[in-house]
Length: 400
Figure 1 (cartoon, one colour):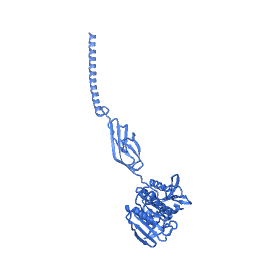
Figure 2: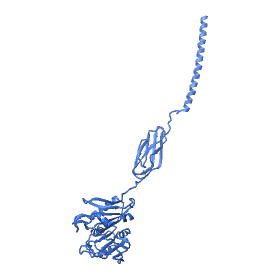
Figure 3: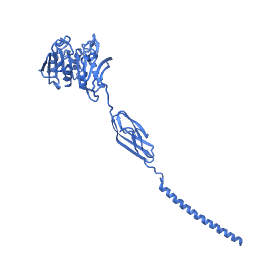
Figure 4: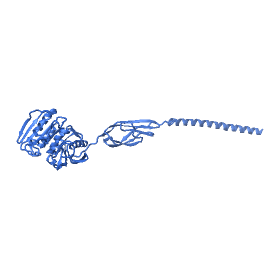
């Protein structure tokens, strides 16, 4: 009996213990459930990553080409790809967060950046962000001694670039050819157009002839013709004009020639054989080679001509050289007829200078003769109505 009683008491005690343990366990589960619900509401709840936001800065907004500009991404978010388009083409220039691009050409450029990351993609564009201008061209002005190779021969010339020269504007050009035995470095001081070039903005060129027949000279006929030697001076003139035109902005419609003595003869030849390159000529104390039906002198256009000759010139006689060179009056008649000018000139006489001007030729060309009575074989130091010979020439040239 006693043993049964003790067993009953023990069973009741165990039942009470088990009953208390079950209540505590239930309460613990409920508490955990409440805490978990609170974390989900405040976190990413499944790992959602936000999209990146594209943006960038530039080191400069432009300048004169060429210019280097650095682009740097200031985008936010998780990013693993940067695609830049900075020059308006279809290609992307970089896949780095920062890079430098060299702009070689002028223009206005949009800049775009596309960034990509786990959260997606974002694009940022600045329209007309970069402005590149052409570099300002600076050209040295003044007198320069130059050379070039033509027909396997070194050819020299002096060139004067006026202080007023603008490389962005087409500029007239004047060639001045020395006489037989002459040199350009001396002739420039005799036929000095530099101050006029500065004032009226034209380039002055003084080519150098080669030594031939006892002195420097210009061959007035094509190769194989009646020349003193074999150099092709007619071709050299065309090559020289092309050379200079490659270095400077030359107005091809304003190419003017003058010359003294043999250089004057040569300017007549250029009006014949290189007519397409020549606008007008103003020979001094020279004569034109004889022109007849078989002559190769075939000007391609009406050409204004200004002529200065003295009546007692011993080297280039006013009345010409029979069978070789035309007289001054024959030359005037030839160009007046070719240009289709008025048949009668306007006449003006100032002292020993007689001026005969034939107007109204085709394309407004004229033939203008200055006959210096008792004038010898000179580059004339004259004054006509307050103008020097060089000023008369440029007034004539600039009207063409």
